Picture 1 (spheres, rainbow, N blue to C red):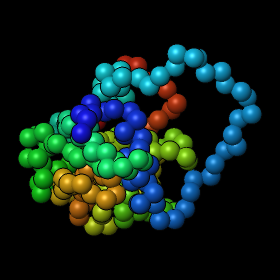
Picture 2 (picture 1 turned 30 degrees about the vertical axis):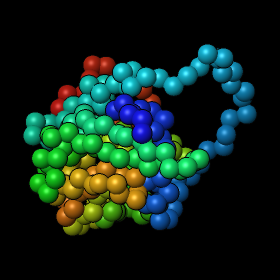
Picture 3 (picture 1 turned 45 degrees about the vertical axis):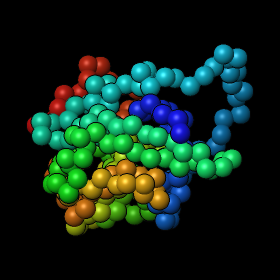
Picture 4 (picture 1 turned 90 degrees about the vertical axis):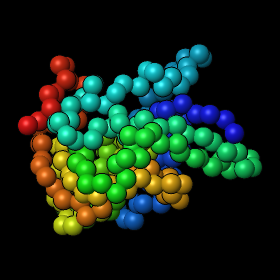
Length: 207
Protein backbone atom coordinates (compact mmCIF):
# COMPACT_ATOMS: atom_id res chain seq x y z
CA UNK A 1 0.00 0.00 0.00
CA UNK A 2 1.12 3.57 -0.59
CA UNK A 3 0.15 6.54 1.54
CA UNK A 4 -1.69 9.33 -0.24
CA UNK A 5 -1.67 12.95 0.82
CA UNK A 6 -4.83 14.84 1.63
CA UNK A 7 -6.32 16.61 -1.34
CA UNK A 8 -4.10 14.75 -3.85
CA UNK A 9 -5.49 16.06 -7.11
CA UNK A 10 -5.22 12.92 -9.28
CA UNK A 11 -6.90 10.68 -6.76
CA UNK A 12 -9.65 13.24 -6.17
CA UNK A 13 -10.45 13.37 -9.86
CA UNK A 14 -10.65 9.57 -10.10
CA UNK A 15 -12.93 9.26 -7.09
CA UNK A 16 -15.09 12.17 -8.21
CA UNK A 17 -15.55 10.61 -11.61
CA UNK A 18 -16.56 7.31 -10.03
CA UNK A 19 -19.09 9.06 -7.80
CA UNK A 20 -20.65 10.91 -10.72
CA UNK A 21 -20.94 7.74 -12.83
CA UNK A 22 -22.77 5.94 -10.03
CA UNK A 23 -24.96 8.83 -8.91
CA UNK A 24 -26.00 10.49 -12.17
CA UNK A 25 -29.46 9.23 -13.10
CA UNK A 26 -30.62 11.51 -15.88
CA UNK A 27 -30.06 14.85 -17.55
CA UNK A 28 -26.96 16.69 -18.59
CA UNK A 29 -26.29 20.42 -18.60
CA UNK A 30 -26.07 21.79 -22.15
CA UNK A 31 -22.49 21.53 -23.41
CA UNK A 32 -20.59 24.18 -25.26
CA UNK A 33 -18.58 23.19 -28.30
CA UNK A 34 -14.91 22.43 -27.76
CA UNK A 35 -12.53 25.19 -28.74
CA UNK A 36 -10.61 24.59 -31.96
CA UNK A 37 -7.69 26.63 -30.68
CA UNK A 38 -4.57 24.55 -30.11
CA UNK A 39 -3.16 24.87 -26.61
CA UNK A 40 0.58 24.52 -26.16
CA UNK A 41 1.37 22.56 -22.99
CA UNK A 42 4.80 23.18 -21.44
CA UNK A 43 7.10 20.15 -21.44
CA UNK A 44 7.67 20.47 -17.70
CA UNK A 45 3.93 20.73 -16.86
CA UNK A 46 2.83 18.63 -13.89
CA UNK A 47 0.05 18.34 -11.32
CA UNK A 48 0.12 20.90 -8.55
CA UNK A 49 1.01 19.71 -5.07
CA UNK A 50 -1.56 19.40 -2.27
CA UNK A 51 -0.05 22.41 -0.50
CA UNK A 52 -0.94 24.58 -3.51
CA UNK A 53 -4.66 23.78 -3.26
CA UNK A 54 -6.27 26.65 -1.29
CA UNK A 55 -8.54 26.12 1.66
CA UNK A 56 -12.06 26.65 0.38
CA UNK A 57 -13.43 29.26 2.71
CA UNK A 58 -10.12 31.10 2.81
CA UNK A 59 -10.17 31.77 -0.92
CA UNK A 60 -13.82 32.08 -1.95
CA UNK A 61 -16.28 32.43 0.93
CA UNK A 62 -16.49 31.93 4.67
CA UNK A 63 -19.04 29.74 6.41
CA UNK A 64 -21.04 31.05 9.39
CA UNK A 65 -20.11 30.12 12.95
CA UNK A 66 -21.38 26.69 13.93
CA UNK A 67 -21.39 25.39 10.36
CA UNK A 68 -19.07 22.47 9.56
CA UNK A 69 -16.42 23.76 7.15
CA UNK A 70 -15.11 21.94 4.10
CA UNK A 71 -11.62 22.23 5.53
CA UNK A 72 -12.73 20.03 8.44
CA UNK A 73 -14.21 17.45 6.06
CA UNK A 74 -10.95 17.39 4.12
CA UNK A 75 -8.95 16.41 7.19
CA UNK A 76 -8.41 12.72 6.41
CA UNK A 77 -5.82 10.38 4.94
CA UNK A 78 -6.43 8.03 2.04
CA UNK A 79 -4.58 4.75 1.54
CA UNK A 80 -4.51 3.11 -1.87
CA UNK A 81 -4.45 -0.65 -2.32
CA UNK A 82 -3.42 -1.89 -5.76
CA UNK A 83 -5.37 -5.08 -6.49
CA UNK A 84 -4.36 -5.56 -10.12
CA UNK A 85 -3.48 -3.44 -13.16
CA UNK A 86 -6.05 -0.62 -13.37
CA UNK A 87 -7.72 -1.92 -10.19
CA UNK A 88 -7.21 0.23 -7.11
CA UNK A 89 -9.12 0.30 -3.84
CA UNK A 90 -9.14 3.43 -1.68
CA UNK A 91 -9.36 3.28 2.12
CA UNK A 92 -10.14 6.33 4.24
CA UNK A 93 -8.70 7.18 7.65
CA UNK A 94 -10.90 9.93 9.10
CA UNK A 95 -9.76 12.37 11.76
CA UNK A 96 -11.34 12.19 15.22
CA UNK A 97 -13.09 15.48 14.47
CA UNK A 98 -14.82 13.94 11.45
CA UNK A 99 -15.68 10.71 13.27
CA UNK A 100 -17.39 12.75 15.99
CA UNK A 101 -19.77 14.18 13.37
CA UNK A 102 -21.19 10.77 12.43
CA UNK A 103 -24.93 10.45 13.21
CA UNK A 104 -24.99 14.07 14.48
CA UNK A 105 -27.23 16.91 13.33
CA UNK A 106 -25.02 19.37 11.46
CA UNK A 107 -25.21 22.35 9.13
CA UNK A 108 -23.28 22.52 5.86
CA UNK A 109 -22.90 25.37 3.39
CA UNK A 110 -22.17 24.80 -0.28
CA UNK A 111 -23.66 24.61 -3.76
CA UNK A 112 -26.37 22.42 -5.24
CA UNK A 113 -25.07 20.02 -7.88
CA UNK A 114 -28.10 18.30 -9.49
CA UNK A 115 -28.10 14.58 -10.22
CA UNK A 116 -31.07 14.79 -12.58
CA UNK A 117 -33.04 17.38 -14.51
CA UNK A 118 -35.65 19.54 -12.85
CA UNK A 119 -36.24 22.80 -11.03
CA UNK A 120 -36.42 21.16 -7.60
CA UNK A 121 -34.29 18.38 -6.17
CA UNK A 122 -34.80 15.99 -3.26
CA UNK A 123 -31.42 14.31 -3.82
CA UNK A 124 -28.28 16.08 -4.95
CA UNK A 125 -24.63 16.70 -4.19
CA UNK A 126 -23.72 19.61 -1.96
CA UNK A 127 -20.30 20.76 -3.12
CA UNK A 128 -17.72 23.21 -1.82
CA UNK A 129 -17.41 24.84 -5.25
CA UNK A 130 -20.30 25.72 -7.60
CA UNK A 131 -20.82 23.78 -10.84
CA UNK A 132 -19.01 25.49 -13.71
CA UNK A 133 -18.51 22.78 -16.35
CA UNK A 134 -20.96 20.19 -17.78
CA UNK A 135 -18.17 17.63 -18.17
CA UNK A 136 -16.66 17.53 -14.69
CA UNK A 137 -17.45 17.70 -11.01
CA UNK A 138 -16.62 20.94 -9.18
CA UNK A 139 -14.84 19.18 -6.33
CA UNK A 140 -13.31 15.94 -5.10
CA UNK A 141 -14.90 13.52 -2.61
CA UNK A 142 -13.68 15.48 0.43
CA UNK A 143 -15.60 18.52 -0.83
CA UNK A 144 -18.97 17.00 -1.63
CA UNK A 145 -21.82 15.45 0.36
CA UNK A 146 -24.71 13.40 -1.00
CA UNK A 147 -27.91 15.01 0.30
CA UNK A 148 -31.31 13.39 0.83
CA UNK A 149 -33.92 16.06 1.55
CA UNK A 150 -37.10 15.91 3.59
CA UNK A 151 -38.59 18.36 1.05
CA UNK A 152 -37.25 19.17 -2.46
CA UNK A 153 -34.99 22.19 -2.76
CA UNK A 154 -35.29 24.63 -5.64
CA UNK A 155 -32.16 24.90 -7.74
CA UNK A 156 -30.06 28.02 -7.33
CA UNK A 157 -26.64 29.08 -8.56
CA UNK A 158 -25.96 30.71 -5.21
CA UNK A 159 -24.77 29.07 -2.01
CA UNK A 160 -27.22 27.29 0.28
CA UNK A 161 -27.15 26.33 3.95
CA UNK A 162 -28.49 22.84 4.72
CA UNK A 163 -29.12 21.02 8.00
CA UNK A 164 -29.54 17.29 8.54
CA UNK A 165 -28.17 14.09 10.05
CA UNK A 166 -24.59 13.51 8.98
CA UNK A 167 -23.23 10.11 7.98
CA UNK A 168 -19.55 9.25 7.59
CA UNK A 169 -19.19 6.51 4.96
CA UNK A 170 -16.70 3.65 4.95
CA UNK A 171 -15.50 2.19 1.63
CA UNK A 172 -18.77 3.19 -0.02
CA UNK A 173 -19.11 1.85 -3.60
CA UNK A 174 -20.09 5.30 -4.88
CA UNK A 175 -16.68 6.66 -3.92
CA UNK A 176 -18.30 9.26 -1.67
CA UNK A 177 -17.21 9.96 1.90
CA UNK A 178 -20.27 11.70 3.37
CA UNK A 179 -24.09 11.82 3.29
CA UNK A 180 -26.69 14.12 4.81
CA UNK A 181 -30.07 12.58 5.67
CA UNK A 182 -33.47 14.22 6.30
CA UNK A 183 -31.90 17.45 5.12
CA UNK A 184 -33.70 20.79 5.16
CA UNK A 185 -32.89 24.11 3.55
CA UNK A 186 -31.96 26.67 6.21
CA UNK A 187 -31.03 29.67 4.08
CA UNK A 188 -30.12 30.75 0.55
CA UNK A 189 -27.25 33.10 -0.27
CA UNK A 190 -27.90 34.21 -3.84
CA UNK A 191 -25.11 36.78 -3.67
CA UNK A 192 -22.46 34.10 -3.10
CA UNK A 193 -21.91 32.52 -6.49
CA UNK A 194 -19.13 31.75 -8.94
CA UNK A 195 -18.34 34.62 -11.31
CA UNK A 196 -15.37 33.05 -13.11
CA UNK A 197 -12.71 34.40 -10.79
CA UNK A 198 -12.00 34.56 -7.10
CA UNK A 199 -13.27 37.67 -5.36
CA UNK A 200 -11.00 39.80 -3.22
CA UNK A 201 -11.30 40.35 -0.38
CA UNK A 202 -12.93 37.07 0.61
CA UNK A 203 -16.69 37.24 0.88
CA UNK A 204 -17.47 37.42 4.61
CA UNK A 205 -19.41 34.78 6.46
CA UNK A 206 -23.16 35.35 6.01
CA UNK A 207 -25.23 36.15 9.08
